[in-house]
Length: 528
Image 1 (cartoon, rainbow, N blue to C red):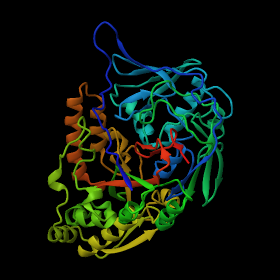
Image 2 (tube, rainbow, N blue to C red; image 1 turned 30 degrees about the vertical axis):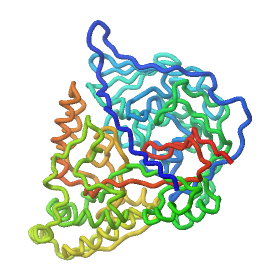
Image 3 (tube, rainbow, N blue to C red; image 1 turned 180 degrees about the vertical axis):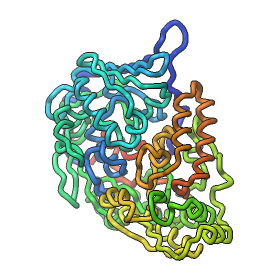
Image 4 (cartoon, rainbow, N blue to C red; image 1 turned 90 degrees about the vertical axis):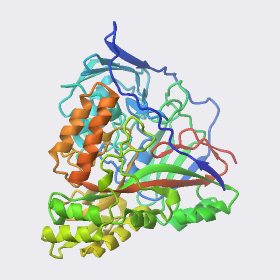
């Protein structure tokens, strides 16, 4: 095994402010090419062994990892983040912010084609943004009162009611992202999402064989930037024709499939399989800081509607035991009170650390007694589709039982779980994770307005999120975020268990693979 340690290059994330001086706006620009795909004939396929099936291919409708990882190959956004988490143009050629921070003007790239052959215009962007704002929690909480304006075919404007210094990062959301799709697709979409999977990305949708695979194929008329590839922006030029996401929930089957050549790349390699990967000289492995493992409380009804019971769980559980059970070794996790990564110097804070990883069982039992807990059943929802979630749920159950709680697990498949977590009668808490976020506002669980599953009731968290947007310097914004993280540990909409890394393994002939909060397959080649 050749080990590729992919530690995220989280440089300084710029605070998006208007320029001072004679000009009243700042501008960022990139060039577009007519077609950056090679003229040479491209053939072959890339077979991915993937652990979970998406609940939808419409990224407006779901924040799930599976939807993100597959649909990012088909859909693109106005702006996205580069490898340093800086916001850069994607479908926009450039963008300008007004001095008061209330107006963002996007000049769209001309000649960008959808997979149906139609050219993208501001009409498509406006329709897509309206749909995304309606269904996405981060869109709804940041753009519900915004006005979307078409100035001409290639000029799109967002008018905000007040300054929002993080709005470009909101538009560059990586998870439930603001995909641009044709207006007619938006018009025909129902409450479950788009009926036709049509975007502008380097791959177009071919087939979804339920419980088997999703098949994408290279979009030969794709128009990308002339800029070098960096993170989610720049050149995208896959050197193969067909991309298959094969749904293989059993980890051992994924591993054996890579060893036998059935798969070129496998995701979510089990942590206890590192030695097995190491024994094979034809396999390369990448370890990537990935996400925060969490247990989200249901505050709307049931056991954890009572704050004291949430506090008891936070006080009593052993975070280290849960993370070790989840990912086997501290080689693959870090216990950290911060919601952001330490490398994110613009945002990271350990505020609230005194309320993290307390492991005080006696005090937890006292809190439960004071709250009148009387052996009510606690249902923890989780999935087997991601081993680390399932393993964490098992140890979490054991930890709660040590506190004297009556606990059951509800284990369902990942796609079904994305619906069930929104049924407050189906669980008292659920185990999941939040991938690396570039701004605090991208944690939907922090916002009551976002109406994310768990239904935090804290208006103070929303107030602090709003306060961050109004700050004129990054230093001031970080100070407000420190207040917010303190408030997070007071309100406890979820338990921050710890940060974990993910493992991706691939055949040594796979070149050009990268990751940024999920796999990047669009510059891969396979050298047989």
